[in-house]
Length: 350
Image 1 (cartoon, rainbow, N blue to C red):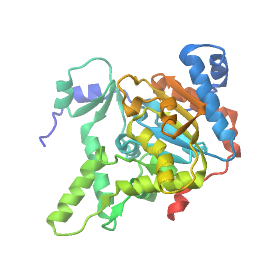
Image 2: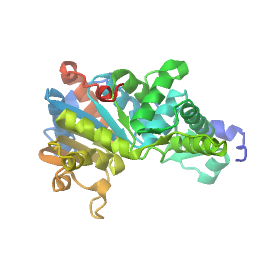
Image 3: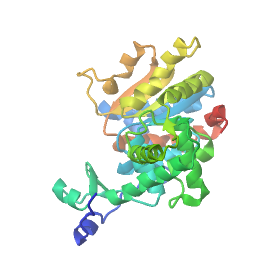
Image 4: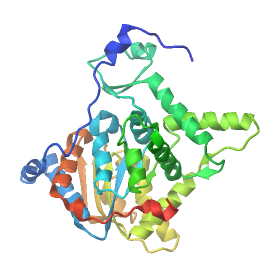
């Protein structure tokens, strides 16, 4: 790969960092209480907050965080970390980009940047800057992320690993003094015993590091480690069976959403009794008219036996505008303080 153009232009483009919102620094309860008396997306947001709080108050319930899209890069990274830190979440299912390109990337000490305004994407390419809507990432720094994944893979026994198992190793590596930024989602989940699954793990910066690991090991005639996607499905289904009552707090849709919902069906096929996810919230801007799985409503999921329609709410809103409100509301209502941590990582000897 050719070296990037080094100029003042790159420094100018990467001048303003994204600052992640802190749900503990403000109390959203009055806003949610007011929204409950309104209509449209405001009332939907309030009901979603109510359902999430019901799940936290339900002593039998295990809430899961389902993440797709780029809200972590956009400023919600610490919201998700704090949900785990404050015992609101027992398991995470996410895209590889949310976990690796965003959270792990910042744990290495790097930042995401705000775009000052419209710019020619060819200029961004000349300066090795990647764009996510109005957010920038330094490609050179992202390649360091690839290399860190490569290093972690090289130190593991050559065998199959679920994404949950490999991400646990990433958390362990960070906790050993390799984190430049403390309190990442990965490291916090590792320390709290909260498993993270990325069912499409290699569709991220991790993929490049793992391909490099396999290519070099194969060329040297040595065995290599690999990601076992079937183990992902089996392990999350094991958690669903053990959990009983579950709640899904979903940001976006796609593979993470369907993967988490399908555990109910998988358990049934295995001959296990697993109830539908009792509580479910989905925050999305997707349309349902094309029949896409990622944009299917929670009511539609009920026809598949995945989600109960008693306590479910679709919120059609851009997630960075409502996730901090729901997170802050839940934090300040204190139900998380009474929850028993499930620490599902213990199911796998972690």
